[in-house]
Length: 320
Ligand SMILES: Nc1ncnc2c1ncn2[C@@H]1O[C@H](COP(=O)(O)OP(=O)(O)OP(=O)(O)O)[C@@H](O)[C@H]1O
Ligand SMILES: Cc1ncc(C[n+]2csc(CCOP(=O)(O)O)c2C)c(N)n1
Ligand SMILES: [Mg+2]
Ligand SMILES: [Mg+2]
Ligand SMILES: [Mg+2]
Image (cartoon, rainbow, N blue to C red):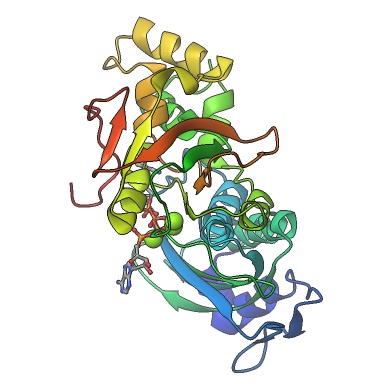
């Protein structure tokens, strides 16, 4: 029988987990004391937190522990990048039932470490408690390197709207998993299990003069709606600019043939969350690197439109 965290005990598990988290140059003191010490060269720290709850954000039969570690880190590190900051450190709240195998906690930690290393961050601490529901609460910190944060309220009429990263792949992957079709179309389920936020594009967007930015966690329309509301503008998207990648088109075909509820590739791109693409506004005329796609413009008004109309798609709402 595999060992469980209940038999290993809290402090045994802490020792096992913290041994996996090496320091980076940003870390003065890592896990092990009452708190960690992280360098903040410009003395303004970006801080953000997001929870993952088993059954709501992930299923252990759909995602490996490494996948959940990658995703837990990614969804927080993407928020740091969306402020225009470079992620530096992660803190990990881990609540789990006593019968959880130690290997699950270790492999989850390995996923966290690997995703942190992709983003240039370190795990510097956390907490462990017993809980009936497996829950992961991550806090991420970041460094603005002296630059002002890129907020949600800076978009102005005339700005262009652009996006970098995946759109719709995670939601299509979830739909395939829900329909029992994940083996037939593995690309989207893989994107659902391990989103790949374009971390470096966040600070790069800040340097390019981004006027507002957000990571797409709940759906493009809903998240751009936060920019529109905070900036008192309308975000006018062009449907034709949202070109569906082949994997999304294939996933939609497979879902349709299996009789799943009809959703077009564009629906997935407009409403699908959890890819953690970055959506930003820039002054018109900004020369954007090729990984960015211009998808519309900022105009006077409110809300988000696609080809002039309010789209009939909704993003994620935990209580919706
Ligand atoms: N319980 C809370 N207490 C204080 N502030 C909160 C709380 N929940 C959310 N917020 C704040 O509200 C704002 C919006 O939160 P939200 O979770 O929607 O953003 P997000 O993390 O970017 O999106 P997502 O959760 O979909 O990844 C953030 O500034 C967040 O810190
Ligand atoms: C098992 C399972 N069912 C449904 C979903 C879909 N889902 C959950 S939370 C969320 C939005 C982002 O979360 P948050 O706003 O909490 O950051 C989405 C799209 C999933 N990932 N796993
Ligand atoms: Mg959040
Ligand atoms: Mg966000
Ligand atoms: Mg978030």
